[in-house]
Image (cartoon, rainbow, N blue to C red; front, top):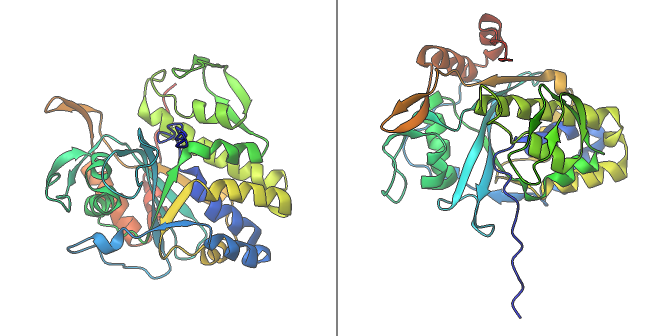
Length: 338
């Protein structure tokens, strides 16, 4: 009898915490886990999106600084290859810039409906048109997504990481859950329709993932979800440090094994090198941003998010030149709506 396929939960709409946890948490503990980190290199699933890209790419301007494109993937077919075009979608898109001195990491979240130019796909069937950003992944997989983000930002992408969140609740549960702030009482739109009460809530993996998928109950919709994702990442980082996970071999092993199962990275991604470069990092070194944008508009019958061209040009020029800190100081974020 053929073995019945296990249907994976659809976690594509949640934060790109897995890769960041894998990279940054090992870095927090530093050289003491050098060999241990090396053992996880062989466990990471790999892909090679850059070899399929044709045409010019942005140059690398500053040595030592680097950029990682982080994607959360979602599919109705759990057996579909996540690095190819087809049935997969990505609603979580983050460009992570690490400064040349490795003291700061800037994580820029892109609205999935950001209206951008998508180049033509390799098969010639799609693209070469303005569309929502997440269409690039559906039309041409990782190569087209990299091309689209590089074309929009003018920033060279050094590494990519994709997360399938089917088993990501195990990452949170390995930490004993996390504490997250709920700004107002809401009822989940997903089964079993749990209620999240205003205030600080201790959540296990299933609850936390449900919470950060919510968006319809908030006036800023998808941007509230982005904000909650960023808070979730900080909570995981802080919990791992405060509870001694990094110093406990059993806890650390369970935590990292859970993360590795949910992550796919490019061929050149070296976990040991990342650990060394991030050894002075913690959650206070992370700066969360959202790609500059205007209010949603209806274009050709679709609700899309136009980019704020002037501000976006300034941000991504600063990123290419490793001067994001200066841009942030000159462009403080607006307060979140109540």
